[in-house]
Image 1 (tube, rainbow, N blue to C red):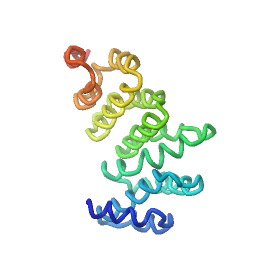
Image 2: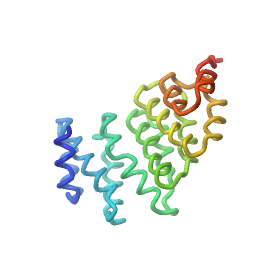
Image 3: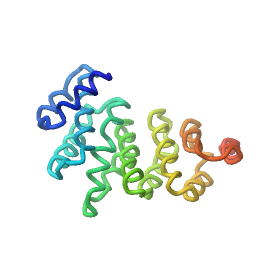
Length: 198
């Protein structure tokens, strides 16, 4: 995969139509290459608004081909998150639609896309709201994503994380909870891990 990612750097200007052809491949590594190109292109300092919209539209339209955890991780926050964050007039309701999807990879996209809001804008509202929707999700790859984003959001707003945990810790999967509390002190971690489901 390292070779795939290195190769992707050479093709970050690849037209969307060609990226879509890669996404249609039955070979996972080829699809990973497509998503890596999208992610690297979306994260580029000089990416144009037009290119970012093109990548965003492709990701959403062909989410059927974004069908594994690593494919989501390669482009969700760089493309979906960045596109939605770049302008106040772009409603983020698509994330809430994805969060309520029956498809686990769409749900993972919803929560991981908020990484851009956290890391670049230090905004955590959408992360906590979407985590609230997904708090009881039993799918491992979704619950881990929820935990990671809660942990990152907690690094920005610790009090809000603690309030979220006070309300939801009993309903969270163990993997989500363990990831969410990783940056808390031992006493806090032990307290939340000791909360029993009601």
